[in-house]
Amino acid sequence: MPHRSVGPLEMSRHRTTAAVLLVLLAAWVSSATAGAAVPRLVFPVVAKTTYTNDFGAPRWQGSHEGNDLMAAKRSPVVAVEAGRVVKWTSSRSAGCMLYLYGRSGTTYMYVHLNNDRTLRNDNDGGCRNRIAYAPRLRSGQQVAAGELIGYVGDSGDANGIAPHLHFELHPNGGRAVSPYRRLRDARRHLFQRPRSTVETLELRVRGTVVRTRGDLDPDRIRIRVTQVRLSNGWIAKPARTVMMTLPSEATLRRSTAPGTWTTATIADFSVGSRVQAWTPVMPNARSQARAAPGRLAIRDIVLRR
Ligand SMILES: [Zn+2]
Image (cartoon, rainbow, N blue to C red; front, side):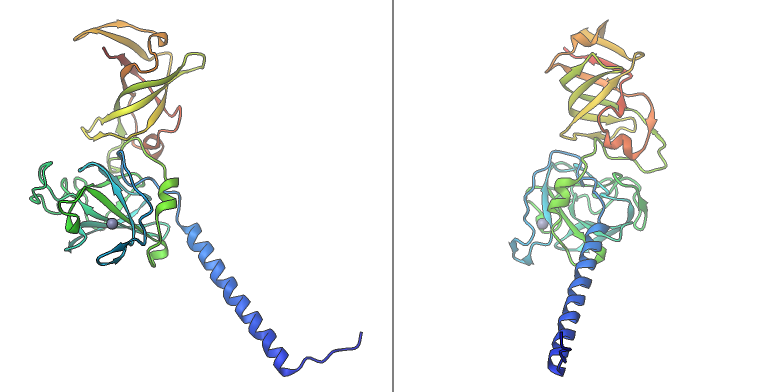
């Protein structure tokens, strides 16, 4: 093949193509790393929550920068990943809000936290701990994934509208992107975690039996949860099921009259039975709050009348 000379014009076209490819490659690499930097989230609300992908929807201030998670007022709001929280109370439109600077470099915004003292729309509570924010939460504090940071409300320009959490996700602290897919993939915890100074917990789980397995070792029972009560008095209504184990030392009882019980066996627990179960003392750990199948044990379970 004869050597073909490359003219200056053609050379520069090649260089331009190479430069464009490099820019595209760099953009692709940075978007891929930005995507990879956001970890699998803990779902930010521990309650029955409804939401759609309303990111980008037209709003009077401009396009909607997050997703609105509709939930009952005062539902627990938790950290979606470990990081540092900063309170923000001076925005008229956001009301009581929080920034969470996640360890991954992602910034999350929690907007319209509760500002009511009672369950009515009294606007009398202010952006204070136990009203908007978790008890004893300090601005600048480090929090663990799943830790209670605040409560759902209707502060700011959500006043008088259905209580919801406006949730934003900013990869690498940059522009907001839709959190929708990450919310769909998020882990729904069974309860809001107390801060790390609380080392151990016990739970009382109330609900109805979905399924029992009396042929396993240990036996298992799946409960559709209506309420979880933590030993520190906190309540959660997590809208999920939990598969708990029944170790051989667990106490199984059946309530026959107020204050009266008889011994029960797993065969007495049928689908739809209303039950109340207590866990043993367990560590205040993310794995316990996540409550994967078989993770939580039952110490005592009562079949309610
Ligand atoms: Zn919103």
